[in-house]
Amino acid sequence: MSVISFVSGKVRGRRPGSVGAEGAAPSQNKRAGAESEAIPGEGAKFRLRDVSLRYGNRPVLEGITMDIPERRITAVIGPSGCGKSSFLRCLNRMNDLVEGCRLEGLVLLDGEDIYAREYDVTALRRRVGMVFQRPNPFPKTVYENVAFGPRIFGIKDRETLDGIVELSLKRAALWEEVKDKLREPALALSGGQQQRLCIARVLAVEPEVILLDEPCSALDPIATQRIEDLLAELKENYTIVIVTHNMQQAARVSDYTAFFLIESQGEPGRLVEFGDTATIFTAPADPRTERYITGRFG
Amino acid sequence: MSSISREWLIKRILLVAAMVVVLGLAMVVYFMAKESLPAFREAGPANLFSATWSPRDGRYGMLVFLVGTLTTAAGGLLLGTPLALSLALFLTQVAPRRSRALFSRGVEILAGIPSIVLGWLGFTMLVPWIRKLSGSSGSGILAASIILAVMVIPTITAISKDALEAVPASYAQASLAVGATRWQTTWRVLLPAARPGILAAVILGLGRAVGETMAVAMVIGPASVFPTSLTTPTHTLTTKILMEMGESTGVQRSSLFAMGLVLLLLAMALVLLVRRVSGGPFKYGVVE
Ligand SMILES: Nc1ncnc2c1ncn2[C@@H]1O[C@H](COP(=O)(O)OP(=O)(O)O)[C@@H](O)[C@H]1O
Ligand SMILES: [Mg+2]
Image (cartoon, rainbow over all chains, first blue to last red; front, side):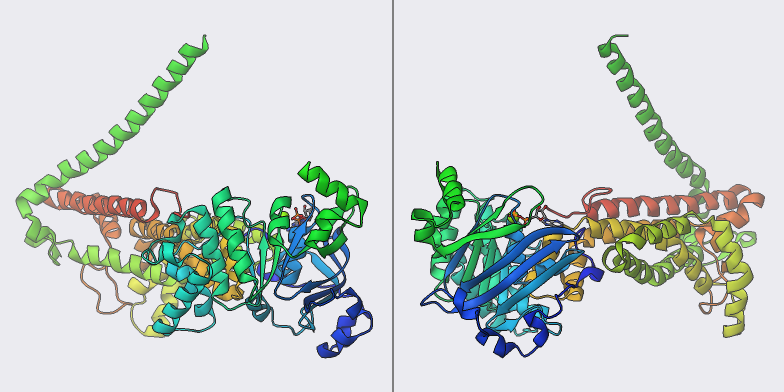
């Protein structure tokens, strides 16, 4: 619990006069300029406008403006330390848990400012689920892991819960492997199964967006393959944002790719290029993207 | 001296030290058993575990004191555990980082208060206060429980705090990330994950409460009968031994040893219980 404390659950420092201060969320996505970042032919799930993030007085992200398309897989790539994880945590406000964290700019989910003062963070996190780098199932049974979210939201009826657990495990392509082990400890599963269990735990609260932070970095190639197949299925119904260290993975699974970079030590991370994955990997517009990608493939 | 022979020497010294400790422990048990043997032989277990203490009539029953020990300890835990757990949660979850150390020091200082000081405060302030409120003598199980609660709070707080801190942060993150509140996360994830450590804390607290003598002696009575209420005098095993030890001989003296033996077995049972619930003396059963 070291980075988390009850007192730090605030993100302060909205710039006065930033658009979020105007209130009235629906008008915001119509404001001039907002459409210009939109990817042609895609609806935007998230809109970020000039987002900057600081931990204390250390700038981590600066000037991020992008639209994350709905029901597509967006990959976030870049060298380590460039703020990929921090970027992801902006989208479900997990950064609120970091003491001294401040966000400026605008983050809209379906046109609503998620950093608005009265915005319900727990409801946000229910809509925007997160899967972490290391599988982190609770030290409970397989069943209780998946039922955790629904129980939090007040579902007590046994049959309803059974149904949710089964459906979520099926969606996470794990049901066949664990249907006879629902009462066994989740920590007894393999790493890949644990990660899919974590995905099932997120799916159980019916999110709209799934954020994954290097979900395969602790997994072997076969388990990785299974997760990638799963993501391809899930994008039919969910907006997916995946941070990955692995160029090939980004190229394989994603529709769009965002490349983040730190220019030099102490600088914040910036979005260098964002576009459809094929273009980024074959004909990047920015020489820095090309250098990074060829270097990594090289 | 070559490093091999130095190592050999160190090993020997450690071995001897370990043997002295084990031997000492074995001797304590042996001595207690041997000294209580006359009581078991001459008075018999039925007499020893009866509820009547009256050496003049050849009655050496310790049931009243055993019940006194168990009820005061249980009372101390009942009052102390919720407070200690709240304190541990406050220290790990709520308190601003900077004031955490301050509060933790406070708890440590509380642990260091000599029991005679607590007993004295109990005798001079708590007992008269209970006497005024209840209209009875004021000393008894309630006063002893309150004093014991103060004594077990530091133990339970410190160990529960360690157990809570040992819960991987990833559990809380997972919970918060599906939309659980802080409170739900604490209640449904942190406390269950820390449960083995918290149980160990409570059992160690129980050990402290069962063994405490001086502070309890000053607020418990004395009386060698079952109390009629929580605020009438009685005795515990420890306080009874304390009161009688100076002027006992023969079977009466031996029966005090039998009480000590019961206490010793109780303490050993508690240690074994801690091992069982926590998977080791100081391991909190949290799997990474
Ligand atoms: N909780 C935190 N508190 C302070 N600094 C942090 C925290 N998390 C990350 N950082 C810093 O922010 C920068 C970006 O980190 P991160 O978002 O984890 O990058 P990436 O995921 O791309 O490796 C790094 O310099 C890191 O040290
Ligand atoms: Mg990262």
